[in-house]
Amino acid sequence: MKRLIQYFCAIKLDKAVLWCYLIWYLVTVYFYFDSSPTLWLNAIGISAVIGTGLLLSVSSGKPGNRDKWQTFRLYLMPFCVSSFSALIKGQGFIVFVSPKTKETLVSIACCVLFLSFVLALKMTKERGFIKV
Image (cartoon, rainbow, N blue to C red; front, side, top):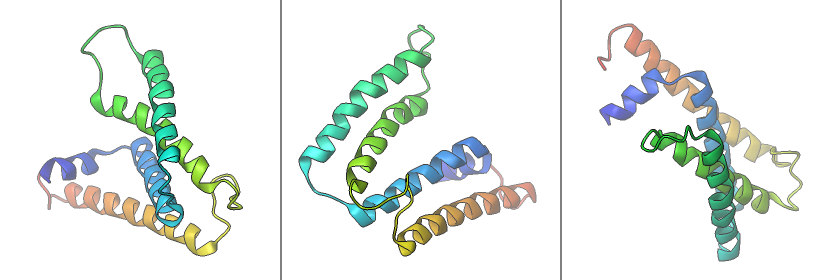
């Protein structure tokens, strides 16, 4: 738990935005979940192919010099994109925004809650209430 708090105390804006992407994705999966194995197997396949391509494109060629979280993200992103696309197909989405106001507000609220949590942690650390 301490490592997680340390991580969020030190998180930069770019990574916080990626967390918001994940939160938006998870909220959408919650509302539009489809148990079809084909959908998820296709997403895994696309993730394997595209993730490997992305990994090769950012690789320095030196073995053992990879950031494990970056590698995880490079495979997770194509999985999320492909499954998100399949889940929202024919649902009336505008780009990534649900046509149902409630769903969009839940996604926004979860992202705002997350960013508020991170900001509160950073302020608490700054004032010396948290020692990490």
